[in-house]
Image (tube, rainbow, N blue to C red; front, side, top):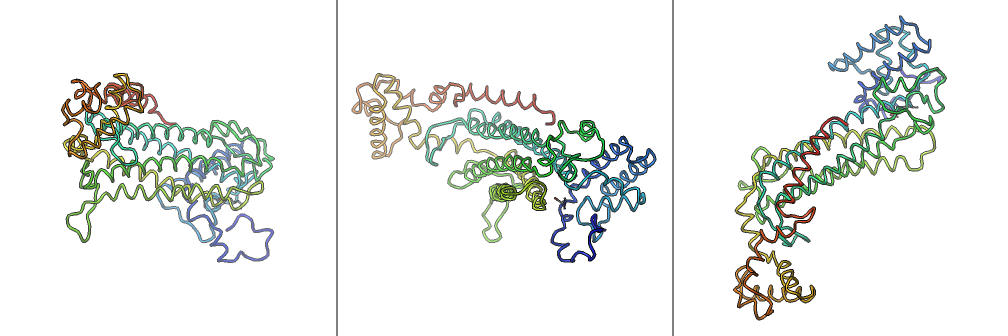
Length: 462
Ligand code: ARG
């Protein structure tokens, strides 16, 4: 069955039907399509288009369809072009020709836009749940590993000492921003197109606000032409998902580096690592690598919807059917990645001794050395130069800054005193960075607590 036979003498070409059908992917909208139709049927009854008896019959029929979908017993037929066709076809099979009345005043154009928004809102809630779980895993780690000092990097070179917890909190902050973006995407999606008809609105007298309330929408669209062709919410969602993947990928990269023999800071749990078919000694961070790799397809889906939308004439065009696969794939990908990275982070073991070993080298407190001289009254550029010369001296002697005696500092500046050793201590270095957002342990503890509180405050659904 198709929904538009009357105007045609010949049947649709079989291969074109296959080419244009969307049932292979839009079956995912089935539950929302049925709910959307249930609500529409009530509006039809209120408008006097169907009788109370028909309302009851159709509603019961839709419950039966919903049950078949839920129990996976819904049978798709060869002519089911899309999910809307399939649901209507089955409804008519169950309740007879009266079932066809559900199409009155409604188009697949406003229907598919409504279904997809309902689907997206539901999935954004799941994404937010996954983000919360990851924040929790990172916060637990940040708390358990409080006090561990690591070399912070810029340009992937040892830069300055930082608390490991401070670095983990950097990821928490990225993901907290992602939660705001998810909320934002949800707000943009939460607007009902139903009642826009094909493009001009519906001739049926319906209360769209009431219909929206029934479907769980906060608002209704205010321009029917825009409503049937607007896929901004898909773009907003895919941008949000892309940013999430960029963050997960950076976290994955951090884990991958930490697992390398060169860093050797992290041991992955066996359950979240893989081996090599050839090299018996290998333990590979494939989970993190896959998360990093899957970022491409999510960003690709964002590019895809932007390209589909660009230059489309108003209003609905079949191009818009291309909105779904990328969105579905991106959502599934992000949910999978959130789970895998959350488990990886939660189960990985951090090597505290290795951290201590690494932080002891690499002239990690050379900036502090310059700051010391600034404290004694020298301008920073000169202090910077002297500290640099001392690093060269250390390199020649095969020493670290903390190994130097006062008499070795003195030739570089008379201002060095006995307190320089204490000043160069890594913990002292951290504690001096006690502004908001710095790596001082008190500040980091405060930021962990603030993130924990925010998580509890915002734990309800979107
Ligand atoms: N499968 C279509 C889509 O996803 C449903 C809407 C079809 N509308 C139409 N006028 N052919 O966009």
